[in-house]
Length: 142
Length: 150
Image (cartoon, rainbow over all chains, first blue to last red; front, side):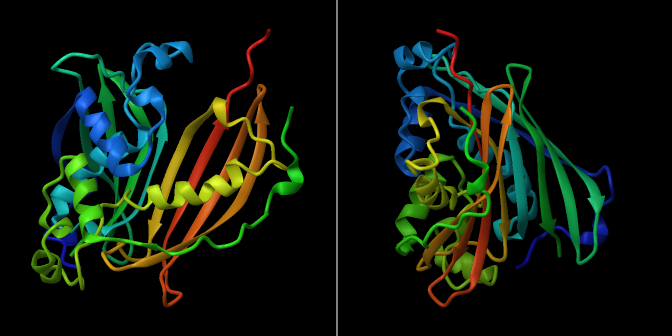
């Protein structure tokens, strides 16, 4: 593994470059196909409303996949992510228009551990609501 | 009705091998809009020290969740899947999943809880490759929401 960020170059509090990820209905259809998760709450508005949701919502695993890109873009080597966990706290609601929703992700180094590992805590919001909680990754730096 | 606590610790038989294909990884990376060349270009992956393209950190969920179907659909457990939502998800990687891997998943029920009428089931999926090497562990928390009052 060859992460491009050196362990010695980061401190607790170091911020990772924040990113925003747009998500439309088309994105969700594509993710459904790629992941094999065809739950209709992710593409059928009528069904979503029938089960009590405000509208179609993004796959939680889609949001989880986008959030870790802040870390993998930072390290360069996606294999540097040793552990990654999240709690799905609020859904990302995706309206049926050209704009869709925006998933906003920021991250910072929360702890420096042994073995060149750091813990990165991610903040993930959409429409100003926190959509992932306890979103943390252990990352092995160079 | 609360789920039977005696299912805690139950391990299900390993799944048949899932062969990870380069094009499946590419399809997944494109679906999340990620252009990291380690996912699509074997030379870029080799430059990072991998024998072939690797998969994004959450890719393996498609495989472990399918395996968790053994638990979810176990009629003896009796989980009401129509009311299930995904609570938590965690992965611990020994190494990244890569193209050419033939992966089996062994699912274990780690915990069963009942809170405010919700059934909460924690499932651990241990993923091994063809040589028996441990590749990744996935923990999935499922919450079956309490049925509404009729």
